[in-house]
Image (cartoon, rainbow, N blue to C red):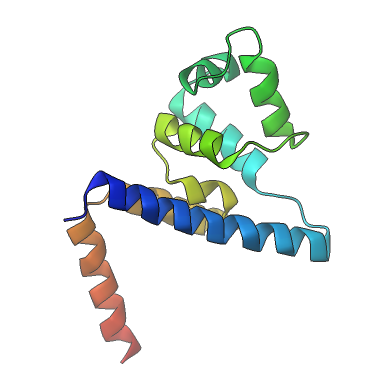
Length: 131
């Protein structure tokens, strides 16, 4: 079983892959980042106010709500460290915020709840389907 550091490195690499791909796509096609929509949906699902989420993620209490609002509106983009804090507070994987397709985002959240051996079992089964 992987330790937390290995999972963090894995999440960091996956996040960066999605982030770089999304920046490239957005520049090429003038697309809108899914992050604002995903952040708002995950925050509401967790039952947090904008202020509460911001404070949980280390944003100063006086600016927490306005900053989260700016991220949810797409006015500003959070750093990777802040996205990772959102992910931890909202119990979703960091790359969830960059998945455009709603069903794939839901799958990412469900996979995030599974143990590593359960994920490996799913991967093994999909490998059998390929053959």
